[in-house]
Structure formats: C-alpha cells, structure tokens
Length: 208
Figure (cartoon, rainbow, N blue to C red):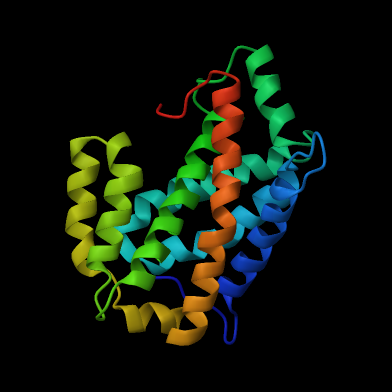
C-alpha cells in the first residue's frame, strides 16, 4: 500500500484542487471551459488514494494513473477538455484505444468511484472499509468489468486497510478526514456532471 511522506495531506490537496475546478464549472461565464492542464493535475492528486486501498484496486490504480498521464501529456498541446473531445471527433478516433476521449471517460469513472467511496465512508460506522469500497466498486466500475476482474476485486476486498489504517496513511484524523472527504464529494459532483454533459452534448454516450 502507498506510503506518504510525513505530514503530507493528500485529502486537503485534492479538496482544494477540485474546489478550483468546481468554481470554473459553476461560473456563469459564457463559454467557460475546463482546461486540460489543471484538470489533469487535480486528477493526479487522487492517484495515491487508489494505492492506499491495496490490491483490490491495484488494477484501477494502474489504469487511472496511465490515463491521467495521457491527459497531462495532451495538455501540452490542447487547451480545454472541449477542444480535446472535438479534435478526436474530427479525427474519427473517439472510441479507439488510447484516444484522449476514451481516457477522459476512464478518468471520470475513477473520480466518481472515489466520490462514492467517500460518501459511503462518511455514512458508515465501524472500522471496516469492505462495505463502502464494495458499494463504490459495484456502482461505478463493476458494470464495465468482466467476470474475471470482478472476481479478483471481490477477493482483494478482504485485504483492504481498516478505516483507521487508511486515515493514518493519509495523515488525517476522523474529524479532518470527514471535512476533506465531504469537500471532495461536493466539489467533484459538478465536475463529473460537466464531463458527462460534454459527452452527451456530442452524442458520444458514457457507457462504453
């Protein structure tokens, strides 16, 4: 599982980054769009969370990190998420493996999984993360995974850290973790919805 440097507080960094993204999405400025660079940076801050969850989410960590890296590389030549999708549409490569559009959809699912996980952790009692993690996986990832991956994840759920161990790895206590988790839940929601709308408005769909 991931080891963080002393006093590093990834939850605070994540909450702050998504607060900035949500401010952009929620602004009433006509034509306001999310830039690829700050979006990919915010998403990269989420990566350590998957590592903290251990073997059950190892597949998700590897896939997520690779897709975020692709978006970070894309940000060097592409300004906004809208332009990125439109360019793939023009080049007829939306659903091709490795396309930025395909990778953004996978990254969005990772963000959504963490959002649901945090919602479940906040609502749950006790020290086990098995129920919150299982519910988050079932809601977001499972519909897109085959039987073999679903079975491997189910087996890995028994190796999850406890709630106390997770908070210790994240250098948080119960109170501070709840504040930062709730902040991410609140601010990631409009960002996730914004991405969904980018796909729906272009008739690309999000279930592939």
